[in-house]
Image 1: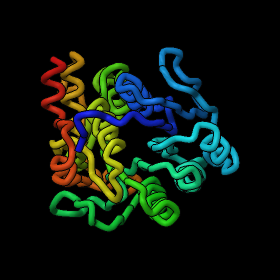
Image 2: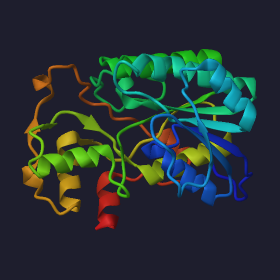
Image 3: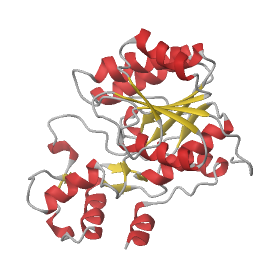
Length: 289
């Protein structure tokens, strides 16, 4: 999908202090994009090369003013809230505000969505054409955000992805696994909850390809390896020098809240369109070792 000569553009990243947001800023800056980013609850790192805008995306006039000030060509919307009370106001209403503002300045919009918009009962990986059927509050919010943004900004690119992990610094999934391995948490990772984790550097590079292509519609971007949360935790523990057998396993029916069991995403379309390798966990961790 990437052309040999990149057309450099004005890129705005919402949630720029987040795990994915920071990697997007780093890669986009290295590629020569003019980058701006928003932040809310965390101050931006001084090392990040970007124009920073404090912004509460729940505030529609403030979102519109920020977009009017920077005039982005393209927006990557990574900002979200996973839990109440901010879940619906940020993840749904905030996304609507971002979509409306992007449309008002004629900016292409890329929205980051999630594999947990599905119930996890499919026997095969979910295609882009699969209809959302969430069973969690967060999944419901992300599915509703997809619906709203497509109505507000019909030419949006919605990228569904999975667990995002990385090393510098370790992501929250890795930190959680290490807490279990170190005996700091009694939590269990489920044997029957399957995902397709993606390395943050791979996801950011793939998204910048989507930026350059002006792709519209749904696109699954995840790692090419499906594995259980338990397997994922063991692999992470091992690469950080912990005993993988210290990871405690369990089963999803033990959870007090419903959990989608198999949210594997079919990434064949992305693999056809993108040059960025969408590597599996074992391949990434082997290179780390």
